Length: 100
Figure 1 (cartoon, rainbow, N blue to C red):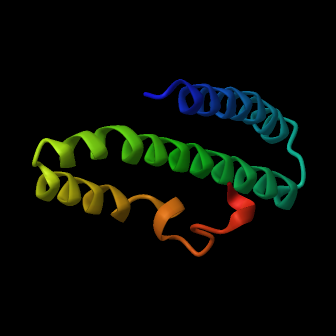
Figure 2: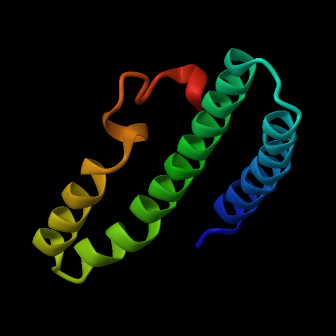
């Protein structure tokens, strides 16, 4: 994993961990449901950003190496399978500038 992507993913994940603790506290305190839902949506968006970072790293490293090694078909199949489950790639906000 490229160092820049690793740092970015870890920083975002640590932020998510702290945010999640806050949301747990909101549920424990029985805060107003729409407030909690808004925070859960923010957590989901943060996790999707981590997925985009990981995908970018994968494309820049593993995919590039697989293509050079003649395993393009295999890596394309793997990517297509991964993208089925990655809203960051297939969702409505995929690729928008504000998400990066």
